[in-house]
Amino acid sequence: MGSIFYMERNGQKYAYESTSVRVPGRKNPKTIKTYLGRVDPETGKIIPKESRSRPKEEYAKHYGSVRFLDGIQKDMGIFEDLDEVFTTLAPNIMGAAMALAINPTSMDSIHYTVENTVIRETMKLRGTLSPSTMGTVCEDVGGMMNTMDRFFTRRIARSSSGFFSLDLTSVSTYSKMGGWAQWGHNRDGEDLKQTDIAMVTDGDGIPVMFRMLPGSIADMAVMKDTVRDMKDMGCKGRMVMDRGFESAANVSALMDLDMDFTMPSNVKAEPIKKLMSKAIDELKASSSFAFHEGKAYKYAEYEVGVIDTEDGYEYIVEVPRNHRDSAAVNERFAKARKLKAFVVFDPSKASDDITKMMSMVSETEMRLENTKHRDPELTYRKLPPFVRRYLDYTVDDDGYMHIERKQNAFTFADNRAGMFVMLASSGTTFDQMMTSYDVRDWVEKAFDVYKNELEGDRNNTGNPERARGRLFIKFIALMMRIRIQNVLRDHDRDVLRTKAKKDSVNGMSMSELLLSLNTVFAIGNTGDWRLTHISKNIREIFSVFGLEQMESGQIVLG
Image (cartoon, rainbow, N blue to C red; front, side):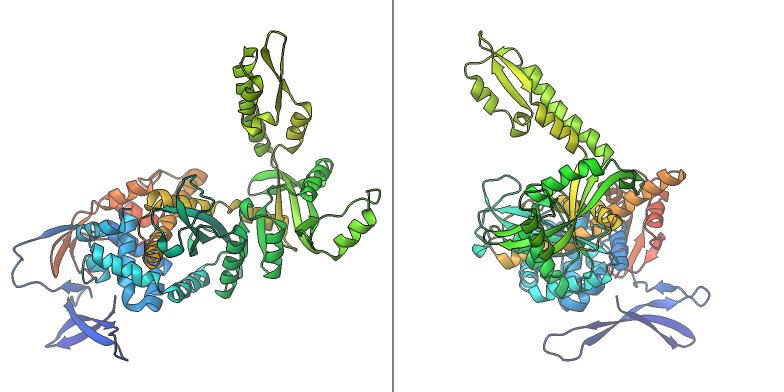
């Protein structure tokens, strides 16, 4: 939207809108002046210009959802950042993202949503984003990788979060994608080539950057490149990753990049297992108890070293003096680069862990105990590894199987139930680690919205630039949808916490909210529009999100 200025003639004040439009090949932008109407001398409001005769044809277009999303994106500064870096492409990108946020569908069907809403008028589009237009827009945007990075830099600068979450997902494709589609670890379990998407969200789960990657690239390379890019874009927060990224080599790479980090350990390395065993006795001390965000925990804190060996990077921990080769081990530990390891006990998780184990064990015992099988060994081998870890079997003289519990495995499970290990950069406190641990699943939720709500489960184009452009537009839609989900969730929690009276917004899902907003229509034609009735429910939605209320009657679109 341009700037509004006023002119006076014959004692009457008139309002105009001045808009600057960049013209290819010209150094200075072109200024377009649009007459809006006269100004009411008493109220100061603009009275929209009236056409000399009411148009023969009038249209009804969805207004409420577009007005709502426009308010959301303005609060987030999305179009402002798009306009700064993409210039003339910004309205098409924002319009397409709005259409996807309202009605998640394929890029070839976006124009139906644009035609049925006031997106075209709001974003001042020249067309309705037809399939051919969207193909060109996506290809242009996807080829502007440096411009995308400038946008990501602006989003990172806007975020006040101290934490950024990184995760990786795969998108299956039937196309070769110019070499970008490759065989790799397909996270959806499909026998298809794939491209990978690395996404970073802030502490509120709002996406701030992404990368489209070849499907065979290793997680370590993804992590190193993404963290390096984040630093180059001005990120000064802590990176939070899931246990899929955890290895001594990855930790060493993070140390090289001098980036604060937190990640859960997969507890595969022997030194980490030793710390868990050591912590069992230390967690009995009263000093191990801690309280975080309304929950009780127990924890023990240790130093872990990372060393470079002939076989690669390894963890190393300090050992007691009576330990074999303790002098040599502790000397290597003293010279190693250090990180922190927190062994944490969560009582509620302990109950869940034991319940999960006993549920599978009991089901297997009831199903196989005192049963006869042609090949008992094969029957046992077909059990999930998790179950075989806790159960063994014997066969009596009559050929009947009897299920026996492994005592050591049960003792181990009892000792480890509710325990997890978090690795973090040196200097990290327990509260810092736990706060980042609490937000670790935000990026997974963002991927869930992307893949299940924004038609992100397949890639049907063979053009990598076009695919990247589509990802970027979905990325913008994702930012708005995550923001809306956050506000809805926080509103429900606030009402529950304060025991305040519930309103019509409580318990609303994203789809229910958008359906409600779509009950507000703009009726009319070019230059002559009026709004239908604004219900109490709509007013409450705008109030919860802190947006300016709508008023029925004549309006100016654009």
